[in-house]
Structure formats: structure tokens, C-alpha cells
Length: 119
Length: 119
Length: 119
Length: 119
Image 1 (cartoon, rainbow over the protein chains, first blue to last red):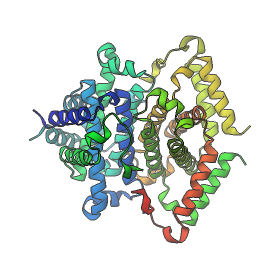
Image 2: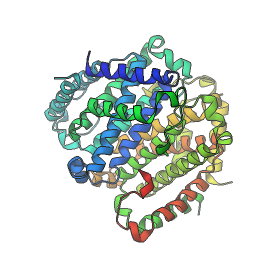
Image 3: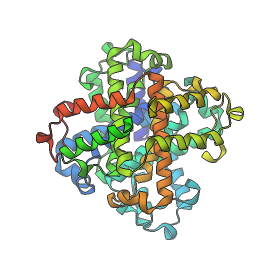
Image 4: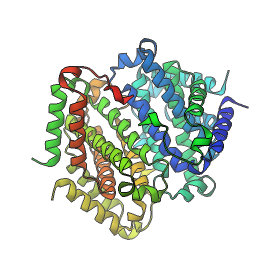
């Protein structure tokens, strides 16, 4: 069993033990994911790019908060995908496959512009 | 190598081949993650809870879009954690450990109220 | 002076009095807005649609938190628009003008599907 | 009637003309708001702080997209507040009142640390 499958099973047991599966609808889990990502973004909002880059080694309290937020985001993402029946790793690789086609390395080297169909 | 480690290495190669690592600062990746989660949430916004629950089997186009959005979210989350040096699976289990203490099954069964320190 | 202009001026004075204008870049304010919207969404995440609809009159504590979150979201949105030089009310009406063209009432009555160009 | 009240009435008429009020529950509108804020954040994600600051005058296409996203965010925020019966300008000023107490100018000048109760 992969790491993410094991995590999905533990999250299911956690929810079942509390009779929380009833709340774990796709809509609700997507909202919870958005809420946790908001908390994660907030950790970085006032930092300079340089401060954000060195934060994990230079601010132990902030590093612990960020680790906790990343854990929350991961848990809701894994739970949402599990409820929807989606394999996250497969979906992620499929998206990179598509992006390799849309963003040829030679054309987009050093550029942040979007591929034509994105707007 | 775990599934997520393999994904992180592929994402790093994808970025390096395009000289995009310069853009992949923690702040920028957190913003990209928020953007993709916004797109994921938008897929569910007008659905009834029931429609959202059966969507993956009853609407092939929506299912494909949601799979793609979940792939995008996973990729930015894995890339952000990689840049920050955080192990997502470890962080996720640590958060469940903490939640098992904060939300004893007997006290919180069937309840959505937050543990006291959250407000 | 409109209500929003007065609010923008008060927010500018609040920032200037604390020498915080240096932090109020468009990127940082967009992140702060995303963080506050995440907190707002989190208030509704576990509620049934019915509970969410009656919340403001039936749960005084939740109502106060939601009012505070709406205040935070408004403040960062107004501050961001001010820093960017955008008139929010004008931008909002322009978007409704566009949506009146894209979503003719007769074609989209009772339907949540998106206009063709959105995907 | 204030600018925001006029906007709220126009949004209500827009929804009623399409029989969309049934979809405009607090949960759904909060999700729509999160989706639009995600699109707004995405406009800034790969820019340097300097590029983001000069964008509105130096990139007419990006400026038009950002104006449109700010319009979308405003519309969903105003509509959500209207459905909840919250006066956004009042809520915004109440939050600044509170922040003036929590963040005395002398103590927090030039500092981005949070007031104690926030963590």
C-alpha cells in the first residue's frame, strides 16, 4: 500500500470513529481544503521573498506552523480525493504529461507566460 | 523512493528544464496552490450536495476537469513542500496524531464544533 | 466621497501610521485577501445548506465571527484595489454588463452551466 | 442609496431574472468567492514584487484581467453579504476599530508580527 493510500485509510478511520463521514461531502471537503490553504498562504503573506526562502531554518515557530498547515492541506486533499475516488499521484503525473506538451522547454525557457488556451 | 518523492523529483526536473526554479519561491508556489484550489472549489460551487457526490460517475467532462484540478493542486503542494524541505506524509500523520488528542472520539462523535483553542 | 473611498482612505491612514505601506504590495495584499477568504469559507464548511442559511439569526457567536471575516475580506479587497488604482464599484458593474451579454436570461434560466468560453 | 446597496440590488435583479437565487446560498456564494479570489491571486503568482507593482500601467491585458477579477470578487462578496444581511462597510469599519486597539501604532510600527491572540 502506498504512503497516500495508508494516509487515506487512516483518515477514513479517524472520520468513522467520530461519525464524521456524514460531513465529508465533496463540497464540504473542498471548502475545508480552501480554508487550510488560506491559512498556509497567510503564513507567507508579509514576508519578503528572501524571508520566505529562509524561514524554515531561521524561524522554528513559523516552521512548525507551516509544517502543521501543510499537514492539514495534505489531509483534506487526500480525503477529498478518496471520497471522489481519484488517485492523486496518477492525476498529478497526467497533468505533468499534459504540461510537457503545452509548455515545450525550448519555447518557454525562463518565461512565465501562459500557454495560449489558458485565457 | 516513495510515490511523492518520485513526483517531487519529476516536478523539479520539469522546472529545471524550463529554468523555472527561479519562479518557484515559497510565496509564489503558495499563491499558485491557492489559485488551483480556487479552480477546484469552483467546480463544486453550484452543485447540490447530492450532485457533487455523484458527479464523478455521472458527468464525465466534470470528472475529467476535477481530476485535472486535483492533479494541479497535488503538483503545487508537492513542489512547495519540496522547496521548503517538508515531508508531507510525515506532516499529515503528525497532524492526525494531534487531532486524535484534540478531538476524542467519545466527546466529538457526530459533532462539528471546534476544539476550544481554535477560536 | 463614496463609502468605499472613505474606507480606502482610512485603511491608508491605518497603514501609514504603522509604516505598513511597505508591506502592502499587490502580491502581499492578494495573499492576505486569499487568507481571509479562507477563514470565511471555513465558517461555512461543515454546515448543511439549511444551517448556513439560518446561521446569522440562530447562532450569535458564529454571526459575529462571520461579520468580522466579511470585514477583513472587505478591507483587504478595498486596500488591494486602492493600491492598484482600480475602482471596485466600476469594475463590478462592468462585469455585470459583460455577464448580461454572456448569460441571456432566457437561455440560462434555472441553469448553472457556464457560458461556452469559460472552459 | 449607497454604491454598494445599488450594486447589491442590481445583483439581486440579475439573479432573479435567471432564477438563480436558488443557487445563491451562503455556502455556494462563499465557494464562488474563493474561486474568484483564486483567479485573482493567480494573476500575480509569478510576478516579482516590482512587476506586480507596475503591472496596471505597463501591461494593458493583465490590467484588464485584474480589473475583471476584482469585479468578480466584489460581486460575489456583495452578494454573499446581501444574502447574509451584513453591511460590508459597517463590518469593515468595525474591524478597523478592533485592529486599532490590537495594533497600537507605537508598538507595531514597521513590524509584521501578529498580535498575541492570533495564534
